Every structure is written in structure tokens, then in C-alpha cells.
Image (cartoon, protein in one colour):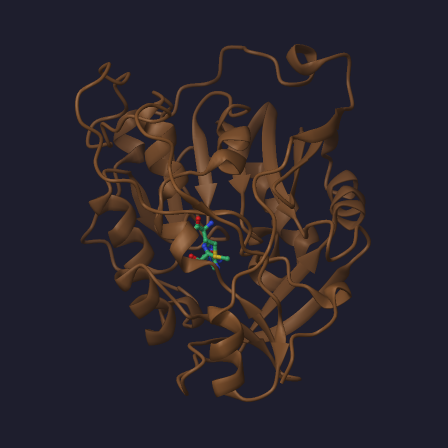
Length: 331
Ligand SMILES: C[S@@+](CC[C@H](N)C(=O)[O-])C[C@H]1O[C@@H](n2cnc3c(N)ncnc32)[C@H](O)[C@@H]1O
């Protein structure tokens, strides 16, 4: 079956994917991160080979979904377009002193049981894909609509669109739903105290193996540094976590320090600014294995702004790059 119309494109994009670069050799020593974090070099050496790819959602059988997931078509890296909503970039995203989040709080206890963790993201299709570093993998809606998940991009190094997020981070950073941890590693390399939080043991394990600090826990469970994080991240469609953006935005407001930032990715321009839907989905590998159903949400920029304002956030900046839409929200 053919891919659906562009109007039904998912918020979990293929975008411009970047292959995992080989470990960097030589070059300037990176700034130190928290204990146990990566010592990687970014931005130098050979330019990474890029593949375009706006993935299409598909409806129908698993074989069809697999074929559609294998297709990758789209544009190359785009310019950053956007608007600063306050007096200017510096005013919008000021440098300031943040309350400390002691590094011992960033060190997860690997022995701690993953208590009260919802099953879906612990299911085999997700764990296997994250461990292998590749898909195909989908969120399958009950009506058969499939959102391809860009596991390869998540398992690669931070790409140019990700760097626009990293550049705006201030203070200690909590990456909510960190997945395999590319942003955690990149931030640690930049010298940010950073903690990834994810309910998937496979994702947390991969983040730690990459040298990042990560905790296997739900964002809705008690977390270290509550009310003290300088920046919280909800990237790659993670505004959908829990299927209730208002509840999630309220929870993140309680995690961040007064004046702190939330950088959230919304459904890209393809999906439409106004998309605001709650859906029941399963993780599906396109080859017959699915996880249990769970609630998810898909939110465009306009809807994100509306939910955010109600939760006490104001928009400091919005930008779009490589077909991905981001908002920097300030408490
Ligand atoms: C769409 S993926 C995003 C992947 C990630 N941003 C990356 O770079 O790889 C959603 C992630 O959120 C995690 N997740 C789902 N529910 C969660 C929750 N309640 N708390 C924390 N993480 C959650 C999943 O395990 C999964 O890794």
C-alpha cells in the first residue's frame, strides 16, 4: 500500500539522518563533563555523510510497513528559520547562575529496580531495536496508521538540527525520554551536568555505554534535582510521553528551576501547526512483534504553545530546522 498523503505525516521524523561517525582521533581535548561522561569530540574532522529522509506513515499490513520504513526520501539540511519572542537571543535565553544539581545526583544506581515503569517501552521490539541501533520500528495506532521511529538517527551522534537544541541549553540539563542518549553524551562533552531519564532499560544501558549518566525511571516518578534543572528537553516527539501534554508540561515545570527552560520538539511543519491528538499506540517492529498498547500524543507548534501557556510556560523562541520544529519555553 502506498504511503499516505503528506498531511498525515508523523511527528516522529526520518529527517536528515547522520551516520554514526567513527570515534574521533586527535584534535583538541574536549571540556570535561561530569564523572563517567563521554569524552567525545564534536564538530571537527571529516563532515559526516548525510542521508535525507522524511519518513511516511503507512496504513496496513506489516510487510507493507516494513517496505515503507525502508524508504527514505527527502531534502537535505535546511537553514534555521524562526523567531525570538523576547528582546533578542541573549535576552530570551540568558546565561545565569543555576542552583547546583550535585554530580552524585546525576549518577544513577544501576542496581535500583525499574519500579513502576510502564511496560510498552520495555517491550522486546523497542529494546531490540535500541540495542541493535536500527529499526525498522513503528508506533502503530489502533487504526493501523504507522509512525516510523528513527532509531538509526537516535543511535547516531547529534546531528545539525540537534546542535541547535544543544546550543540553547543552559545550566544542568535533564533529557526526558533520552532514548539511546545521543544528546546526553553530546551535552556532557560540552561540559553540562546532564542526566538522561528513560523508562527503557535498553535505552538507559545504551546511554551509559556511550558515557552518559542516565536513570531508568518515568518522568512522572520522583527524580533527582526536582525544581533545580536549568533546562529540560522533550525531543523527538517526546511531548507525546504519557499521552497528556498538559500533564507532562506541568510535571516538567516542577522539575525546572524558576527561570528555567524547556526545549520541546513539536510535530514538524508537514504535520501541521494545529495537530493536537491523543492516540493509543503500540511499538511494532513491522515483522509481527508488537508491545502492549499505551497512550501517546502528537502536538503541533500552535497546540504546544497553548498547552504550555496553561502550564505556566511562556514562549521564548521558536525555530525550524531540517523539517523539525522546536520551541524554547521559559518558566
Ligand atoms: C520517541 S522516543 C525518543 C527517543 C530519544 N529522544 C532519542 O533521542 O533517542 C521516546 C522515549 O521516551 C521514553 N519514555 C516513554 N515514556 C516515558 C516516561 N514516562 N518517562 C521517561 N521516558 C519515557 C521511551 O522509552 C523512549 O526511549
